[in-house]
Length: 115
Image (cartoon, rainbow, N blue to C red; front, top):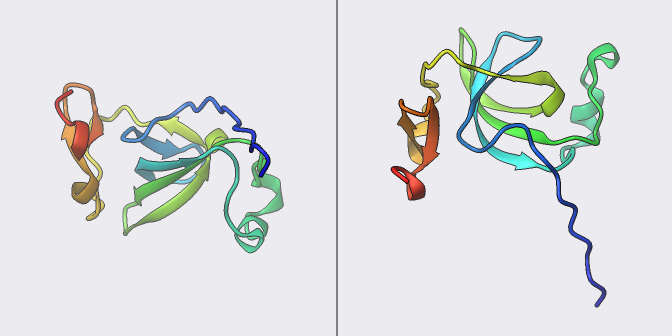
């Protein structure tokens, strides 16, 4: 078996950070990161071409919310900005994974909370 090259990718956001979409009215907490696009072509092609992001960048899995609902979102790095509101995310799954750290204005995964 050959060695598989590992690609090191710098990401702007970390697991536990609260971010918001740059164009659309939703926000969420990062719970996973893909170094580059890793979803279906159908999903990608459903994005309007004039706002379709490049596949060659990190993509973030968010426990997201808008004014009407909570859901899981998959968003390119170029479409995210840091949410500095200091308001916890109300998504019902957040508490299964994270604890809110008000001093750091972010979530900490339960296994390293307090460190």
